[in-house]
Amino acid sequence: MAHIPTDRQIKVCCATFYQSDIVRLLLGDVFHPGGLALTQYLGEVIGLGPADHVLDVACGRGLSAVHLAERFGCHVTGLDYGPDNVAAAEAHAAERGVTHLTTFRQGDAEGLPFDDGTFDAVISECSFCTFPDKPTAAAEMARVLRVGGRLGLTDMTVTGALPDDIQSLLAWVACVAGAGTPEEYVATLRQAGFTDFVVEDHHDALRELVTDVHLRLLGLELAIGLSKLESRTASEAALAEALANADNKHPADNEHPVDLDEAKRLTRRGIELIERGVVGYTLIAARNK
Image (cartoon, rainbow, N blue to C red):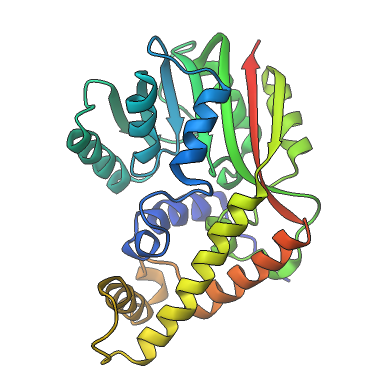
């Protein structure tokens, strides 16, 4: 039987995983399917404008928050569980010259550190599926939104129960094992007080991202095996070194919970499940009652 990780394991591993050099080298700076183009589209769907105060839940390194501030002129507060991500987001906002429009802080999506009705809009990209207690997270999003405020999510979804072979901890932090159906997400959000739902399928963006990661993993496996090959790119060399260093650590002390063989298997399995329609990527927009 597959080991089911605890809520704390999921939160800590998600935070360390998405702060790691390994993930940045595999995915670049934008960790979610569709990149900033889908982020901008999400902002358009929920009608962001200069007067809005927006909360980005699980903001990562702040690229989406900064992009929304630049594109729509809104003020964006980014919240992330990982302190390194918060520091990186603040640095990125400073580099882009939007510190007057952005604020970043550490916190938990299941206990948002904000007063009731603080925000005009809440977004969360490829993160809701990783929250162990989704009803609590949804209720917290509704609580910090003003009446009539807008919610915008893009997230991993499934059409049914996932096979046991992708219930590992890596599958959780890779946003697979905790995903629900679009109908389940809508029901959870409706129970929290949201209404007027818009639901769109964006599985092509997910397939493109997972295929790209799988190809990078295959190339990096070769780079690790040919560690003295001078023709490797700088990113291949850096990731090969990061993976090698992670493999040499005791599992309890490993800040990068990545096993290369497991990562390759998971991405290969993911592509198969996306093509079969079992795993997808969905945009959900709604309004707070």
